[in-house]
Image (cartoon, rainbow, N blue to C red; front, side):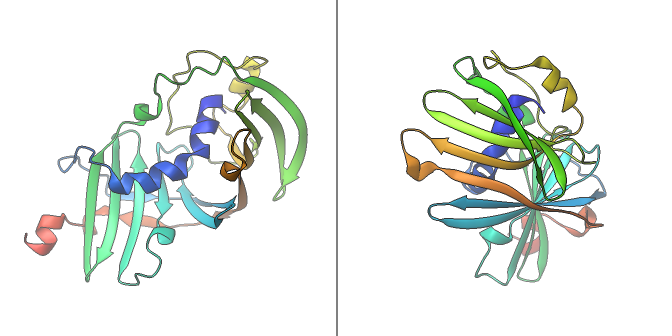
Length: 236
């Protein structure tokens, strides 16, 4: 798995929550596929000083998109359901919503390359391989990426049929010290993070752990034809 993709995924949840408050360009003219189909649910538990959160990501083998169940974002509001799809091929994020008896989709133009900023210079990080371990029945190889501010320990498996790799691009200015290019080749197609421990050396309150608690098969799909625009649904 590309190193910067691991780090981006670590903070992907932050992006998903922040997206609700962005002013990105609307993409109403983008034509979505008839359906978005998914093969697996990747369950991720985040443990932080302020509490635990469980997030469900929906993946499909070889697909350039993934889904995200926003149940954590709509707690306490039984009348609203939302499901987000990030489609790297169409460069769009689609939010499928059910509210007031209506099915609505809101499309936002968002390039996958937006994750590839000019700040991906990791030359001040060291990168080392550590002892492997088994997580949820999957044999995982361990790595530590570290500089004077942060230490990130993560475990990756390539013994899975799905990955986030098809969604994110690559734009790293400089590799970490000690990084072996062969690791990139090994996780280029399949690679899934099963555990991550983030340590802020300056502020321990920012420390967090992310752990995959399950990778379950599913036949879930979204029929995009059943979702209309906000304007069409409410006539406003």
